[in-house]
Length: 622
Image (cartoon, rainbow, N blue to C red; front, side):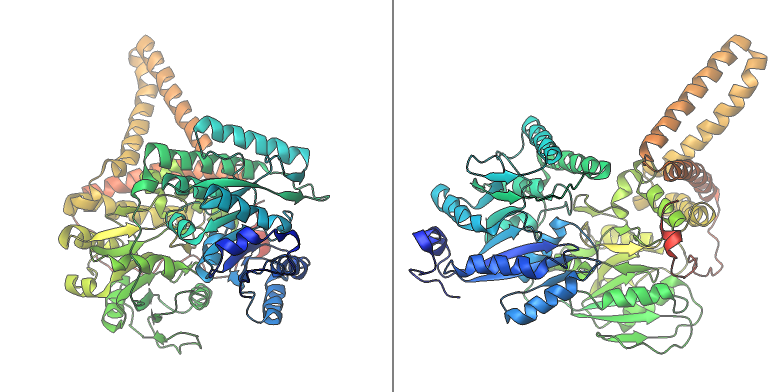
C-alpha cells in the first residue's frame, strides 16, 4: 500500500507522523513466534488491520523460532493468503529473540523496522505513538516502556518485580538511559539497527539491552513511547535458569562495553560484491545417521552458493540433495589425506571443513563467508556446541568441555555468545579456509592425527601471515563422547599430541594454559605422597602440611562444584567428576606426549560415538 497524503481510514490523523517519516519507505514488522499455532492467524490479522489504516507501505516478517507445534504451517498458510504482504522466516531450532530478530532483519526490506512480540500481549494500536516519538525527538530508536506515564499495563506482580529488579541493576551498572529495555515493541531506523546487529553477540536473554547499548555507543538517539499490555490470565513464572542467564548476559554486555570497549572496535566486514562459492568437505569412514543429519542441515542453509564433497572409504551412491553433492571413495586413509583430496576436488573460492558427526546451524555459511571480503583473512571458525538431542552422558561431556575450569580461554570453541576475535589455532570440525591459500600451503600435513588442524593453522597464521577470525554466530552442533570412557579416550589423544607439539611446533602449543593440568597432576601426586609420608618423619610439620594439602584440595573441590553447578543433583555431580577426571587425565597424557620421542604413526580409524539416534529416555536428564 503506497503512502497517501491523507487517509480516510485514519480517524483523527493519528498516523500523520508515520506517513511523514515513512514517505517513500516501507515499514517492516518483525514478529518472533514460538509455539503459537492457535494465535498465529488472528495476531497477524490484527497487526494488518492496524497498519491498513495507516496509509504507509508495510510488510509483516513473522519468524518461527523453531516451534514444535503447528506454527510453521500456520505462518505458511497466512503468507500464501496474504499474496506477498507476509514474508515468513523459519528457524530450525529455538534460538531466542535475538537470533530471530537478526534472521527477520536479513529477510526484510523496510527503511523502518518494528520489533513486535508475536504473542501480541503488547497491542499494535500504539504503533502511531512510536512514530510520534521518533519525529518529536529526532530519534533513531523508539522503545516501548511500561513506565511511560501514558502506558496502560495489565501485568502480574511477579513480572513487575522482576522488571523493577532488572531496571535497578541497569541503573547501578550505568546502562542505557531508558526506563525499560525489555518490552517487546521497538521501532528502529534500518541503518541504525543493521549497524547494531552486526556487532551483537547475545541471542537470547539480554539481547534487548545489548542492542540498545551498542546503538547508544554509536551515538543513536533513543526515545520512549507508551504501550498497552494485556498479559491476560497467563502466569508465566520466571525460571531460575532464565533469571540467572538474564543477569549473566547483562553483566557480560556491561563488561564488553565498559571494560573491553569491544563494541567500539569490533570488526564488521565489508559487504560482498558477489557471492563467494563454498565447497563443503566432509571426511568420514562410511555413511551414518550422523552424516545424514549433517547433509539434511546443509540443505537448509540460507546461503546457497555451495557444493558438498563427502569422502568415505568405499563406494556409495550420493543421495538426492537440493545442492550439488558428490560422494568420492578414498580407500582407508587418514582424515588429513581425505581432506587434501577434497581440496583438490573443490570448485569453490572457500573450503568449509565440517566433521560428519557435526551438523551446521542454518545460517552457518551466511555468518562465516562474509569475512572473506577482507583480503588478510585466511580462515574463519565458529563454535561447535553440544546438540540438544545428544544422549544424557554425552551432554555431560559437553558441559565438561564448556566449563571455564576445563577450557579456560578456549571456551569460545564450545560456547556461543562470546566475542569475535582472531585466533591462531582452530579445529577442523568448523573451519573455513580460502581454497587458494590451502593450495599454496599444500593442504594438511598427513603425518599426524590428531593435530593436523593445529599445523594447518600454524601455516596460515605464522607461515602465510593470514588471520583466522572466530565468529560466535557461525555455529555447528558437534556430537560429544559420553562421560567417562569415550570422553577421556578422545581427550587423551588431544593432550598427547599437544604435549608433543610443544617441542616440535611451539608457536601454537607452547602456552601456559596447556601446562596447567600437568602441573596440577604433579602437585596432587607429590602432595599426596608427602602428606602421607611426612607425618612419620616429621610429625608436627607433617600434620601441618597434611592440613594444608587437604585445604588446597577442598578449595579445588569447591571451585569444581561451582563451575559444574546445576539444579539437577545427578548432572551436577557427574559434571564435577568429569571436570576432575579431565584435569588429571589431560595432565597425564600431556606429560606423556611431552616426553615422547615421536608420535604414533599407525593409521587410526575415526573414533566416532555410536551412530544411532538417541531415544527420548537417553536424551533426558534422569
